[in-house]
Every structure is written in C-alpha cells, then in structure tokens.
Length: 110
Length: 118
Image 1: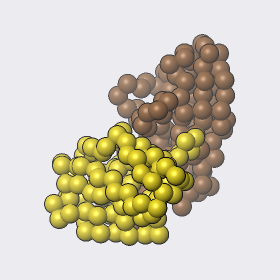
Image 2: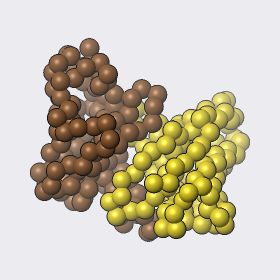
Image 3: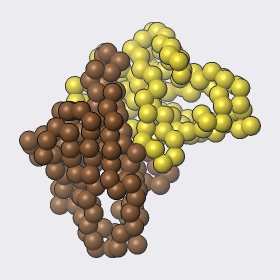
Image 4: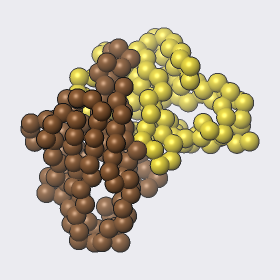
C-alpha cells in the first residue's frame, strides 16, 4: 500500500484558491490517486480522481506531475462550506481495501 | 452511485453491552467495508465483508469483538460486543462502486453510527 503524507491542517479565507499537496513516493504503476472530503458528522465523499497530468471537475482540479510521487488538490475560490477534512488516497480497485491517511483539516475563514 | 443507510445513527450504550449496527445499500455490491473513526481522528478499516464468506479483519480487530454478518449483497451488520468507553466512536459502512471514474472504484459511505459508551 502506498503511504501518503499531507499537511495536518491549513487555513484560508473565503474567495481564495486552496492547494493541498499529498506525497506518495512509493506509488505503484497501477495506482490511482483519489481525494475525499469529509464534513463533521458525515461519511467521506468522493471529490476527484486521477492517474496523471491534470483532471478537472465541477468541484476541484487535481494536478499530478510526471513522476506521480505527489499530487495537488486545488479548490478554486473556497467558501466557508469548504471547511472539512480532505483525504488523499492511493490505490487500485477490484475490492482492494482502502486505507485512509491522517487527512488535511482545512479551515476557511470569513 | 450507491446510497447507504445506517441504523442507528447514534446511540448511548452501557458498558458491557453489545450493539448491532445495520447497513443497507440500494444496489448489490460485492464487498462492504466497516470503518471506525474515533473523535478527531481519521478512518480506520475494521474489516471487509464479502457475501457468503467470513469477514476479513484488519490488524487489531477480532471477530469476537466485532462480529460481522453479510447475509446478502445489499446488507451487512457490525456488532460491537462487550462495549467499553474506548469503543466510543463513529462506525461507518462503505461500499465500492467499481463503475465510478473508470480506473478505480469510488467509495460511498453511510452517514455513520455514533456510539457513546458510558
């Protein structure tokens, strides 16, 4: 299992772009990178997934360099409601158990 | 996608008792996962439950303490046995949708069951 390392916490202000970087130095060839968001009293929710280069959806962008040893989740123009814990996960599907790291606690201030 | 319902959403339990948490999925899934999330902490995988076979437990979790049932492809239960205050946590049921983003599965979670053991 590829281990991931993320900052424990980050602070931001409304309207700013937030970039959360995750390190996964021993990522395997078949591994995908997936980010989840968790609000208090809720289960985690899928945000975005990628294999290489850049992926963008209506919520976020995911930047993955060529060596894939890290990835950056970019949240454009955050709002107070983006305050949550963000988890970076690395792995494959097919019933492979998913192990969560410590996550990054993002605080968005007014 | 998958919609997961967990019961109970929360409960307060007495030390030494047992509580069974139910997880219902709106579609058939091969594997279901049970996680524990202690206050302020990340999720810890307890076990993986396949229909028709015994659950596979992670290190630090045993069947006697956390028996799991998986009677069909849409339902599972997790029992927390002989509870102590250290078992106070949120317990989450999860399933993987292999038809997600195309490449690897997307996990869907229930809202969780918050247990407080006095």
